[in-house]
Image (cartoon, rainbow, N blue to C red; front, side):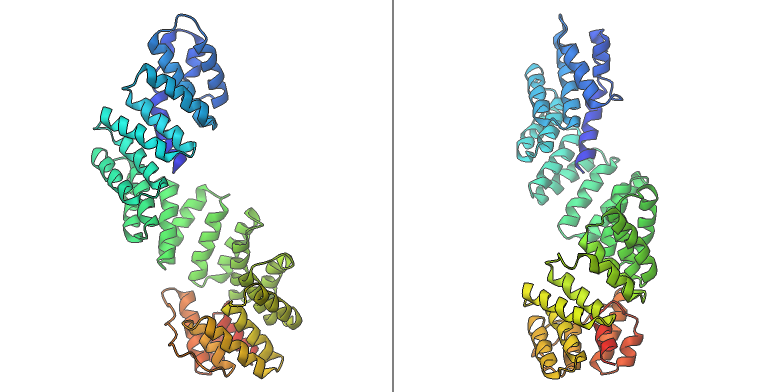
Amino acid sequence: MMDRFAFSVLLILTATPVSAASDSEARLCSDARLEPPLRVEACTRALALRDLTRQQHLLLLGARASALDELGDHGRAIADFDSAIVLSPNDAVLHLNRGAAKIHDGRPADAIADYDAAIRIRPDWHLPYFNRAVALTDLGQRAAALKDYKRAIRLNPDDAWIYVGQGDVLAASGDRARAIESYDKALALRPELDDPRAKRAGLLLRLDRPAEALPEYDRVLATNPSNGRLWRSRGEAKFQLAHYADAAADLERALELAPRDGDVRRALARAYLGAGEPEAAWRTLSPDLDASDDAADLALAAMVAMLTDRLSAADALVRRALELKPGEAAAQAVLSLALRRQGDADDARDAAELAVAFAPDDAEIAAIASLAGADPSDRAPLALPTSTPAEAARATCVAALSAGDLAAALAAGAMWSLCHAAAATAR
């Protein structure tokens, strides 16, 4: 959001000609096509010219400040804006740009005063409200930010970025439905914008609507093929739709772009399991296991090791997981399965009872515990979600496992789940 916000302000300033200084350096200073360092140098040379008028001096300072801000030298940019505002204290554009530089410098609270000044000078201009909303959002003042976004929309309902900003605040507030509506309005005005489309897709995914999210990811990836986060999200959408092999292909690409991302590695391993490729899941997880200090990571690897008949590795991994986090219910469940497979029924039952104690609401853990003969929790497990095909498959597996029907649990197709591992190792 910040880069687009800065750019919208920069255009206003650099559109003001400084060529009245009648010098080639002044023209270069105001040429937004040049790289920022070249513009800074030209502005500095132009400012050293003699006999500059007050207006020429003002415009050169403003142009150099914008170039410095774009370059990332926010402190010097703010200093130039300070000097320019001394020359023209009632210039709303200068206040707006200085506020932008302060936000880029990590000082959103200081930027508020500049936006307040710009609003006093030009109360009918939408950008000060828009940019103040950005600062308020950075400060965590979402209600105030939404009020400013609404004011900006009233003044200029055709600026798509206002709706994007409003959508961001609504999404951060947990109001996903209204956030999607705001992104929809942005896309109605600017259908080529990838940012709101990707954010809209992410919200659809979190609302368990992967079939709607998928074409949005297709469209955004067409113009952003090097964005690993998008490949991961599209892989997640395909996973939720139970298109496991396709999900694995997307997640492979995501891992190529971010080879150290543990979340992507785990997601890829689950996709391989879903596609019926446990050996590929093991190859995905095993390179980082020696250095891993994540209990959930190790528990998943232990489950995969067990599914690939690496029983000693499974036992060692799950015990490492429990050393790191004794209360990890999934690790206790995997330990119960490993012990049961080794013929240690009593210890398997004890591990299962611990798993239930750590996660009394988890229906999947409860089903695995019942398989080990553990006493059920006094609290009834929560119903599993069934909104997506992947979730429905797991719920079917858990229901069958709870009923002791291992064949039906295996046939449910949730091959990435603890439930499936329990049914597969209990045969």
